[in-house]
Length: 526
Image (cartoon, rainbow, N blue to C red; front, side):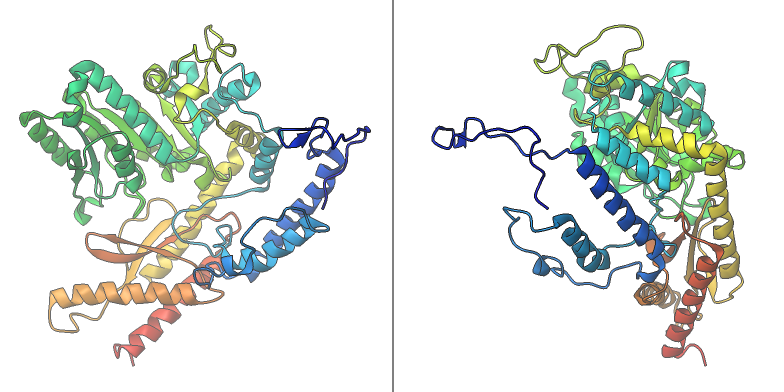
């Protein structure tokens, strides 16, 4: 649809071009309030219809590379077609929706949830409509101060120590993802350590994690200039429930110190990606204390569970760490993207990431005074989004009790799935279920080719085949996998806002049916 013309009259002097434009050419009006209201209703109706029809879609698209590019023009239009928004929404319905993974489907059990809610989505729309850029306090005072309030709200809701709150001398911010949080804290730790030992020791800095730590840590270490050879990956064991061993970390650090290296950073996890393993944070803090190592806790998924008192024991020891991050967009219905990062000493972060306040762009905006926060100094980017607005709305419109109920409901559904797995002698739960993730696999018949090694290989092949079969079913669940301790396993992560008990039971029936068919085809069942 062509943009509306201005209500005021103007003339065009085509005979007086200047730099390719006529002197009095006016830009089109692209923020007309009446048009925004009319088109906004159409978008809301479209999204509402999408959610109403969600169960009609196969969760995972059955498409091949190039499927969409072949249906779209190679160049953007120079002029809009008649009723362009309606035509574009038709293309979304007919071309784009069939080619996306429907993360909000009640049958989406892969990876971890990207939870959504009506208020979370509308909060995103509200923030997009206001479109402020809160890089300094002066650039958007209310946006900055709302963020300071809401990160403290969230910290209290998750029962975090007051030392991480602005009210207790610490502080927090909303970033996009945990990847950013890890990078920001790693750079902060790097600069703090180099100020102590000298910049010439950059090549001696060593960082530590487990073999279950998210790959974002390795990427952050690379960006921060840590040598690949200086990233210590500590092996975990099934007997320890895949948690990081404090004794092994302590030993690795001492070996590095003896070799003249400088231990820098430990990334501990509460809820690892493969199995939601929980590292023993208190013991790890004690183990690394002699070396002045920065300890960061990545609780991207499981941190949301701290809103429930029954999960607080899994956060034991966080009062001793330097920083912690979690993602409200995973399990607290706050929509993508939203990661909360808290630090005990935000001044160290500002020292590492702060920009020159005399910069020509920022000097007029700079405001000194107690309690003034310029969030540009808390992240990698200058331009940032008003994420606090949607989290504030989620709290205001749902309250912490409803968010607690969401977590508990998903845990109950995961317990149900776990019970069904354990009730089938052909299957096993590979790792303890702590939250709403169940890691399981089919057991192969005992050593079908005559040896334990053959049995292990066959088990992995069997379960890979099972996952492929489950995910091929058009109306079935969509699950993901992990390989832990050499064992290939299936992951059923309950967390979609729309998931009900019937979806969990249906998912298990698909797993059983596909498992039976595979075992029969291999001659292991009559």
